[in-house]
Length: 122
Image 1 (cartoon, rainbow, N blue to C red):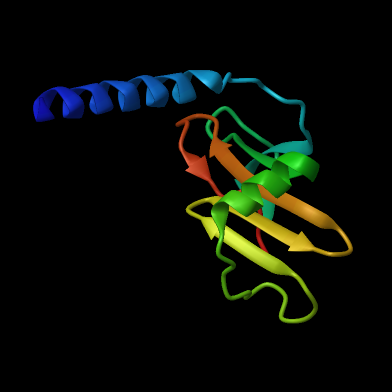
Image 2: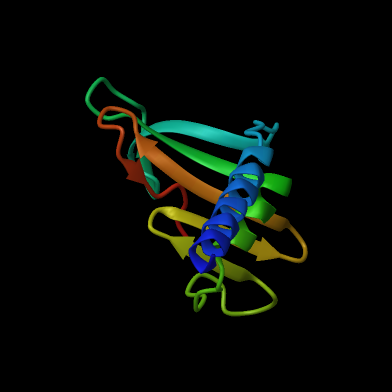
């Protein structure tokens, strides 16, 4: 009897978990932002070439806010020491918040290798 109750509870939990997982539908949302294609480095950009092409994305608004909130906690800010400027960074993705400018996130890719790279510098 005890095994039957445990089995029934496990089955009910599995069904509830499966239903909860099925409720989320992938829905691509519009986003606000900019991009730049370049060669060289972000701090010293060159025209893109057949051997050196990179892309940097700069995302603003709702998508940037959602990314910023997901990344927490803030890092010690080495780019701006004053005001309410906040920085969060994970690998090559960086997001900032400033009460004057809102949320922004930056990231990039080397277009020839597909590897991710930073999309901003201080």
